[in-house]
Length: 369
Ligand SMILES: *Cc1c(COP(=O)(O)O)cnc(C)c1O
Image 1 (tube, protein in one colour):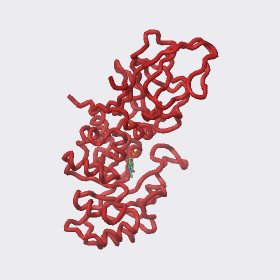
Image 2 (cartoon, rainbow, N blue to C red; image 1 turned 180 degrees about the vertical axis):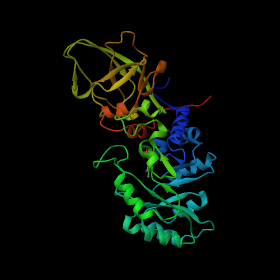
Image 3 (spheres, rainbow, N blue to C red; image 1 turned 30 degrees about the vertical axis):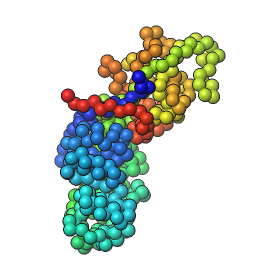
Image 4 (cartoon, protein in one colour; image 1 turned 180 degrees about the horizontal axis):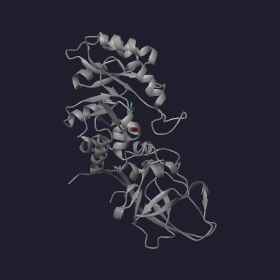
């Protein structure tokens, strides 16, 4: 028998979450964002659940090729655009739309030989200060692109730093919306401004002809813990589960694991689970991080090690060797453990946990029947 850890990808949850993105932004087209191997879910599984999207947004050419090989003929957008001049040939061959966020990318386009002009998404840095032209430089970039025979349609995009919360004394996006609107209001072309948080929280007030649904497609909650999966009606698309492979009875004064970071102050029964940081479970998750034992809530004990972690079975006398441990996602009998709760305990976000699922963990795709 293989080591009893596995990840399940719930295709029906992906489809449900995509439907939620559509319901939140009924007038918009939806990019399913599948960068980073579909946030750790795998491109093939994501494609199965999200093929009802209007397009797929990603960063890597290999992932774009994978989507084309799976049969996707619709739009694919490269969110960071091209990284070198040769990439434009791949864009032409695979019919990829691409972001343009710096002058060099325009230089490359101007030299590119193509029969089919490209659709590009010109990106403004409206305040995030990562990629994009400043509001001052944006119109000159647009004018330059618009004059190129290599360019077909120009769409306009920007990205919010704070769509998930109230910040800067207001809704977190007002200053960026104002910067974007001031410069683009009279330019033609479709707009793409909303990530998941903006799609969920700000849609009616935002013009975004294409929303970019990343984390919400996978059932992650961008504004957890202010809101949870029940509030937004999103379903977890990934479950990480394993089993108890060892049992220990502790006496007061006994410690557990590396560094003896936890010492029992009462008699305890603990289960040793075949899951550690080399599987993608965060080592930073402290003592007491929530887990499900046969669907019942309990917590981790002591430090997470490379291949194992310990869980408290003291209050669960029926639990023993072989008990099912849900690290996140769906547990038995309708139980659930949101990935965002585990992430919060570990001082991070659900995004990072999904993306960090290790290659050694076998993945099972639960198809829609
Ligand atoms: C990753 C990414 C998104 C998706 O963000 P979520 O918060 O996961 O919805 C949208 N736009 C850009 C430019 C991105 O890089």
